[in-house]
Image (cartoon, rainbow, N blue to C red; front, top):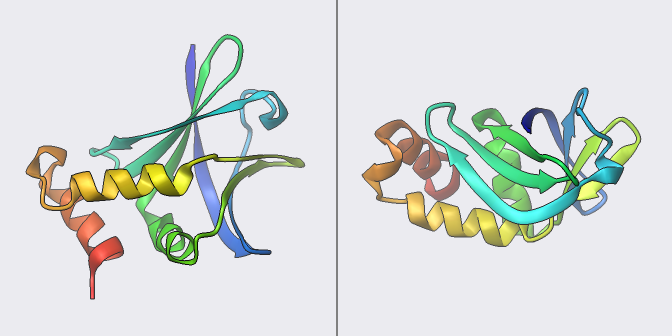
Length: 125
């Protein structure tokens, strides 16, 4: 079974970017980062993949938090996911995001809205 959690808040603190979610279906103490990200073109969101013994958990990062992602990427800060008291580092987040951004830039296959949003947030002047 695959499930999604949506990032509700993002804060840069202590040299890290913290992405906050509510009500994760499993404790973040029980998940393993997959070191891989996907794109949801329709929702204008990035998704970081985590897994447990029996499911994948997708941490969905909507466009409203992309400026925080860009700042953390520029500052080379690690990215952490937090739900309540549990937290997990999203390993290789910056590498994965950078790879996706370069693939989306100028690539109409991702849809015009996503391509333009990525351009505006990550490559805008």
